[in-house]
Length: 431
Image (cartoon, rainbow, N blue to C red):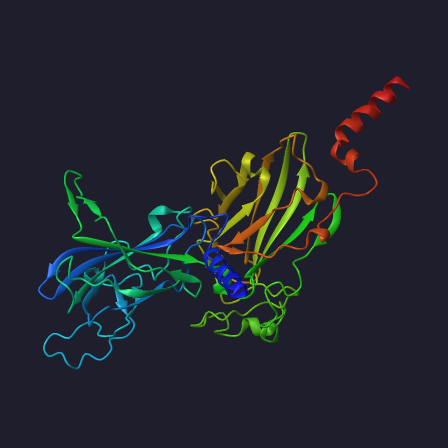
């Protein structure tokens, strides 16, 4: 009995923490259904998907949303989205529903669809930005007309078994819950209207559910040690090593080799780490009151361009960032009392697109940080990041005992080199 209780406690604890991200503890995707009108056999609802994750966006080929109807509902029509299958609508004569499936699967429309098929915040191919990067682009919406359903607050049955792919697995959605009705403001901001009924669905992300291996890795170097600490071997798994391509292979120039596959299967450059993304952190310079870091992100996937990419880093000195060159930067405050996490992302129309593997498949920047003399040190790997995330995926760091270390000869003198020069000059003058 004790063994059963212990196992149950571990299972509950694991299920609760699997989707918890310590750098974004409140991050989630909220799907809100607002019933805006009743129809003779159902209702019309506006469905709004808001990505409240600070540094994880939904990238191409976009989100896929599905659910199960509680009764025998059908979808008469949709604006701003569509179902992937119509299903069996043979029992209907005259007007045929848009979808008759018990479990419809919905996707966003592509950009450039006719105006009469568009809805606000729709038609981006399912790409949704991270809230911390661009709140205005972190929303996706569509309108759905539901039939054979309840026609009042008391008779409507909420959909169930929601599933969100963004674009792959990793999200777990809770049950739909009725919440206070949404209040809308008219365009002239002089009148408020209210939804007839509102329910929310909250989906959280777990990297453990998304993939068994990391999707990126980190390498390290410094000005005070010639040793470069590479990414760990097979950091992202070596299952793709059989199909990888060498950087000088003629296969890279074949027509169609760079075309993405429907299942997003990567075509990786052959490396010892076999990761699609490598983040390199280089401690570049050490001044009296400041120190400088160079960060480079390299793409090793020949079939993937990363638009709206984000890089989240945890380091204690990010509480005093003086300047960031050629990246945009925003501090993240998951816990208001601790300011040790920041998000870097590309400047719009400059380097917000990380190109596929090759000569242009990298972005880089430098960071100038002001020292806190009570905490700053180059000893014991303090100058290297504690956690690194690319596009919301935690990257594998090298083992701490492999970090570049200060030379054993004179670690203190290295930090006080200007004072040493000054002392020597004084001694020469006296002599």
